[in-house]
Image 1: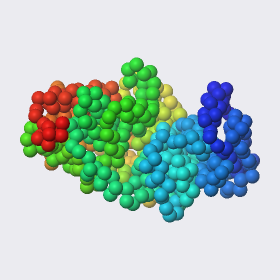
Image 2: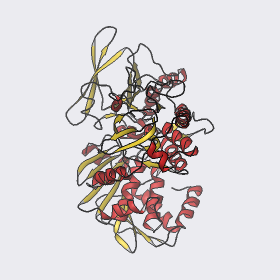
Image 3: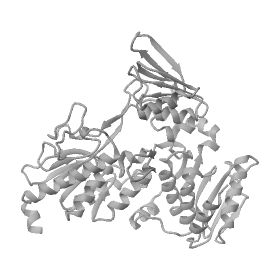
Image 4: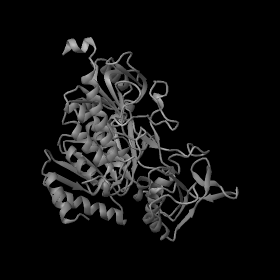
Length: 529
């Protein structure tokens, strides 16, 4: 199962174990159980600190637990074979169980240990899902650091009957005590915030203690990270307030146009951004959703940003880089059936529709690429485009048309996503030329129709926005408000690309630097200096 290269890598990792661990498997007579046995025997054969036994009595077969021999009550269970994107999760589970320290703060570990109450987590993942490892690893750490948390991580492809029975149509899908608890990617910080009811108040209290920044960046995507690095390098006190560090990059799979890097993936790039930011004295504040901007009353004065948790931060200058999100169809049934057949990530959720009929809405590059990916997995793909022709690159169109299991419908206006109350069963559209109404029976709808800027919180701030909600900026990334700059997909800059966002972030930072050195600081900052 593991090639020579993977075995060598795994052997090097297992050398980091500080204490013995034990793997306990529950197996059946099926091929997946045979794969699991082979994997576990291989792992045990690479380190004398790893023991394995095959006498487990779990109803889920195949499955296996990982725990320190000295603390068997704190364990994590994998149901299925965690390869693909989850091989790293498996390695980390082995290391953490064996005493190797995780890369989280002592404060976070204390928060995990303090969690109380019944916590029986069941989390479904797919091996091709690039959003799943973060959730798998977060729950793994909680299980190994708090014996009250029982965590089972289930590979959906190995448990298709359970996936269908429980109505899982999008991953990652996390159940707590038998009830759906979180759908989609959720970080360790977010999980702890949901479990620890006092977390929001604690976070707000910590923010209230912070002094004003010289530069405060709102948003932690490529533009925000770039801006923060540039201002920190100029010696200015810099903070990043982000709802989720990495932004939409976290949800991006293959990246092949980031110059000098032939190929990378969104989560990997987001991790690299975070690592680079941490090289500087930048105060990164996560899980903060901006709610209101109160502009400074005078040039050089403090701008104030109020957040959803009630706390606020002040700064002499701001860089707004809140990015964008997937655009919704806005038709009946879409919201009702999200995670029940309506999806936005073909890489994550495509495997859950193996052999089924799906639609892709959108004929641009992202839509056609999604249809190509899905055509290799599902039974049939219907691509629906509002325009009279596809807008994707010709090479992508040619590839799509080469599949026998793909239909392309143009001049089609999607009017409704239909379902039986539990899951999607079809899609209705109107022919824009004839006016005729049509219905397509299917089990999944993947929406790929572009982006919406995350700027609703700015509508009453005085920052000029376009009719589409984009922040209006000039050639120096300045908004109409002195000391307020903006960068990335939330702005009017053309071409929403990662590399462009990074450049715009640097430009906004340099403009903020120019603004700060040309305008006198408020008296309290000048006195403190």
